[in-house]
Image (cartoon, rainbow, N blue to C red; front, side):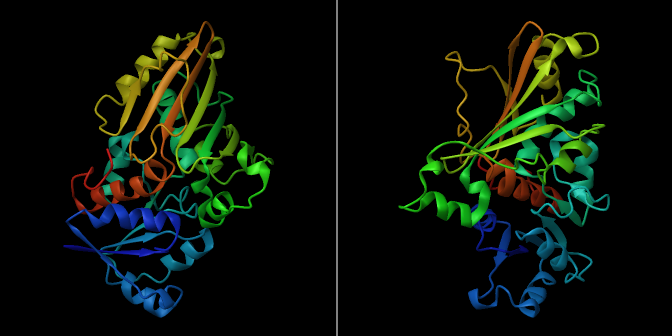
Length: 310
């Protein structure tokens, strides 16, 4: 039985992790008394006893927590933005390549991808690696997410009985176009420039829809919509968690379709010189806690799908 400690277990991602791990059967979640959750000495003692530490903390707190871990055998999985483009950390998206999988399995430091970034990278990475889209293509991306992605404070705002009327409608944010996920969205697929990224939060609890429009007439060889779809199907042919599916016949894709699941679905649609690639995932699942558990399973040599909601 492996020991696991969740630093930040009272937060949204921490609670989601605890729910998944409760039925794992091969790990024991180490508890900390509520009054000691911010006690550095108590946290440090538990972290250095653990086989795996999940960091569910703000960026600076995550950096500080890493400094408390001196046990060379402790695997750290950071769900914050702090280490995602750090070359000394494995990027926790195993489906991208055997190299990613190996680094996760052998690494002591694993950076969990961001939720918006997961949806974007799931589409952009294979398109670039397969040569269908060049690395200097001016990607744009819009992403619709449930309000749980904003953490406890935003959840309380949306669930308050006297909430402002504006929370009943979609709300664009990160209006400066400098979202914290952009560094990984550029670096991981190997783009020469960051995508133009527009996130939108909506009045539903969890789920996410990330859309990438493509001008096919600007791409080398002018690929068709069918060739884009075939490329993604081939790339993820062996993945149990990422599937490429046909768009619904009614022409609608609900952003909460994957709520409660730890997988990701890709849809390719369009006509003529225009294509649209859409990723659907749960921002709390493949976009956070589900991915973290998958990375833990790989790092500990377990079935990668153990306790995931497939």
